[in-house]
Length: 135
Image 1 (spheres, rainbow, N blue to C red):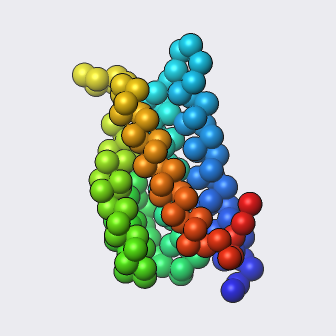
Image 2: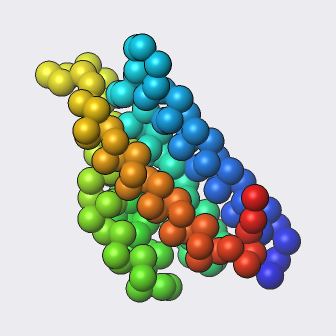
């Protein structure tokens, strides 16, 4: 395996892990910032999937659409398709709460589901790449 590809894959996964850490910190304390936290959940999933695509040599365009990224990964490994429902739930959080609208912030249950799903995608990708990329 090419060392540069492993390096870039690892960088994507480190960014994903940092998004998960940010989401966790933003949801705690007396004044949680769930709108920002849920955005980081989506970003963690997106960066995890992009890390896998880089590792696999699969080209992708700039997109926040997790369904597209899951489909691309699924063309290489159909187990990724099991993540499609998670991708459908998480994709809107790339923009949904980032701008003023009727609803400014998710409730705690919505945030917790997003965090759980983003961890699922991150862990799934790490499991697929465990023999090549470790932390």
